[in-house]
Image (tube, rainbow, N blue to C red):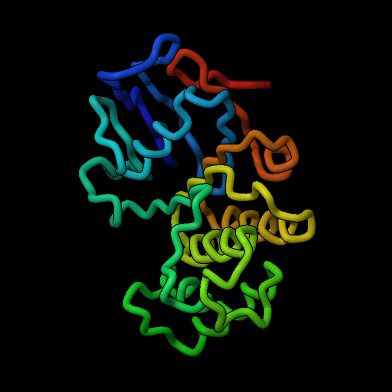
Length: 217
């Protein structure tokens, strides 16, 4: 269980009409997906940043199965984030970019290499494993980034509009990969404006209003 209790953050600088104070509370079971909706500036990126450890909270608690995640550095939390930007290494071929999710030291086993090639085929990138990111389209690069995150097998997966700009067939394949991670016990927080993404993956929905999460029916 991912438990977030009054995880708070304050912005000293903000524009008129913006919310400077945030207080997030929710519980998310293993294998469950929570969608977070709201307009630009409502705090979705703030929430993801706090969960991932990119922002330091002003107060509150964050725990996974009772373990205090705030006491751990981001790389030890077991939380993987996929942003709209792909964040790939331009000098590495596709298969090694994906492989970093399995072996950060790039010492991949035969089984891991097989998983990479199977995954690339599932997301429509078969035959492109030796290409560099700069040789791919924007949608193809996003598929590589998402596949890298999914193969990592993290206990918590944070998805920030990861399916935007993808064709229907590719999106269906990526949905299947996310469902597989859910079935393996991963908790998923999905930030998306796309109703199809939400209906395909979310078990519960909430909306950010006034710096707080409000459940949606």
